[in-house]
Image 1: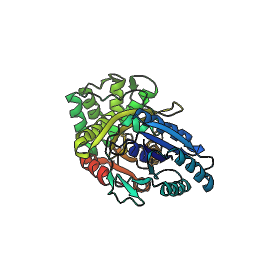
Image 2 (image 1 turned 120 degrees about the horizontal axis):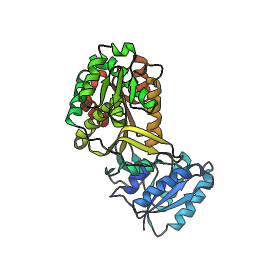
Image 3 (image 1 turned 135 degrees about the horizontal axis):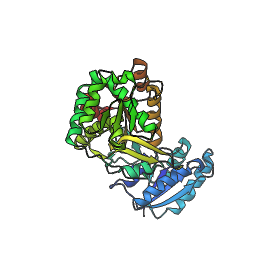
Image 4 (image 1 turned 60 degrees about the vertical axis):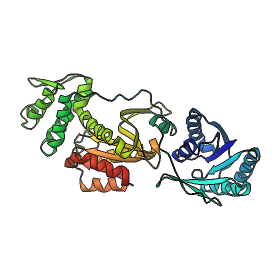
Length: 377
């Protein structure tokens, strides 16, 4: 039997990619797992079984004791004497990796390492086979499930009217003149949502705002809202969401969709609801898979300096944490913000490895996305 041994860690992608790659796919996978990685191993086992593989767990008595690790792996090797075995050393702890390599050398197993930077399997030891390029075949449900997240409901791609698409283009082209008014309208729409209603009353300053009035007229003409004296009435909850910032999410998703073939995007979603093991839901604005990596985009139209809205720093930290939790170390994050960030915020984004596209640069979003996916770190 063709068997692949994988060392389980918090980073599921390397084991998932090698075990399901069409050219490397075994008949059976053995997951070597420490006690604290049992949850991760169960998540991975579930996905691999859905991929048609037999899966067994080899539990370690003590991942901190090198001799015990070797003994456990020797027992495993004894049970696989009739199998054609390969060892993926990418995961696990350093002690697990060293012990596994010593057993692999003793039993002449093939060994490899998954290089996330080049998307290649690097063969090790006496095997001089050239690196194997990993195929791009994963879909979002399986990738996310390997990290312990489910998709409780399918993502629905909005169907925009031509009028709505024209409105989005107007908002993008007039970024410099509409930034302030959009932040105010976003705030009003958020207030209506917080009160679970489709109406919101404008105060005197908002009614007299010469920048806000033409923006309201644009959304009115697109059928998203109507004005009755000092009251804004949103056409529906979906329309309120569109006004509150959904238009930017749609613009970003359209840009991603237009680059699907150019960038080899395998799967993509907008407003993706994901659910962790505790049934806590979290919505991601735009998510896609390319080059066997997860890309997460957060879209913001609110003025993040407003005391009652999430600060830019908080948004960046949250996006960075989501990238780490949802898709592992290889996941990349991008913040698309209608307003420009300040220099300290840009420095924080760089420190967190979060790409940023703001202000007038949104008009060049496809170009920015190409560079981010192909060359971003």
